[in-house]
Image (tube, rainbow, N blue to C red; front, top):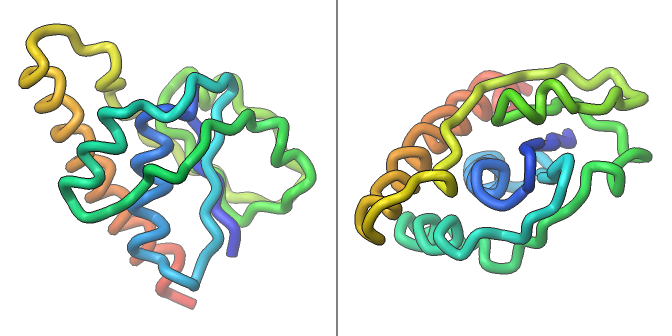
Amino acid sequence: MRILVLCTGNSCRSQIAHGYLQHYAGIRAEIFSAGVETHGVNPRAIAVMKEDGVDIGHHTSTNVDEYADIAFDHVITVCDNAREACPVFPSHAAKHHHNFTDPAKVTGTEEEVMNAFRKVRGEIKAYCRGFVEEHVLVL
């Protein structure tokens, strides 16, 4: 099974989801993440995932066009902008959508910003756990 997580810049939300989907699915699924643009992996996303024991430090920010020839089973958009800009994949991919707040847009002290990342991380973690239970482990 192949799952693509799509976001605007492939820097925060899609990277966090990629990490958790891989964590929960293990070898049962191949996980990819991409953006309609590429902004590089956000160091705060790497840091909050490391706090929870998931290493995404090796991830790269990838443009969705690089995956045009891959047949995905599921495409998950994690922001409204990506859903609107999501290309049509030549596959039978089921599309799923959940709009998560972009923690990279939060301003304030470093602690306030990191707490925003932690909040979104928790929301994405719960979503990914449920997604894997419903769509991956049922096989």
